[in-house]
Image (tube, rainbow, N blue to C red; front, side):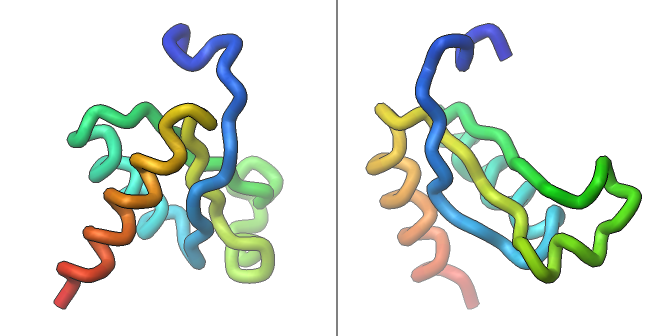
Length: 79
């Protein structure tokens, strides 16, 4: 998005699937942290590559510590 233009982005977590990464991204978004997911699966042509390389959840470097805290809290509250 335009809001992320010019910001340095860092990986805050890696997930085994795009679905799990998207759920975490939505949690961050609901808490005011802009983020996106990054995959290396040949444009979804080879989704099995997600199992090998994972799906990265990226956030602005300036928001990384907040994002990590939110994700840790989410993991602790998971059943």
